[in-house]
Amino acid sequence: MSDFDILVGHIEDCLDFERLLRDVRAVLGVDLREMPPGSRRFWGELGDHRIYVNDEFAVNGIDDPAEPYKSHPYEVIVDAVDDAEGRTLANLLYDTLKRSGDYRLILLEEGAFVGSTHFPEKEW
Image 1: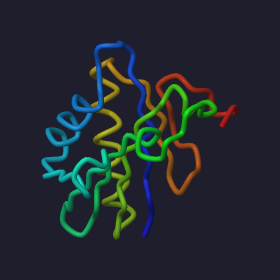
Image 2 (image 1 turned 120 degrees about the vertical axis):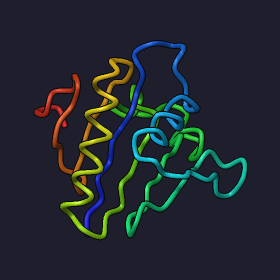
Image 3 (image 1 turned 90 degrees about the horizontal axis):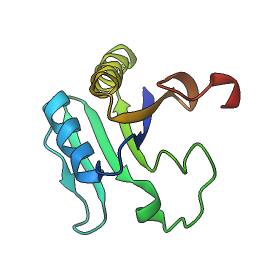
């Protein structure tokens, strides 16, 4: 059982959290629900796996985050029961968001650096 995290920032100022939610829903086909209402924390189930999407700094009241979190304020988590399936879901989402060209992304597996659209591995 592994967690796959995608730290998400955006290239254009016009992109927002709601756009990320729409994109995650479209790519994974998952129904995301805000829990509790007004929290800016969303989750859904995809088979045995859970998908979480958070506006991390709004949720936790962090005023001045350090990098890379400052430029990546959103987080998508694939909480996978099966590592291979979780990796496939995380890679699908990462690759699709990357192809859009609208996001800055960092992919992590169990907190370890896997890849990024721009952030150097040696700085992780």
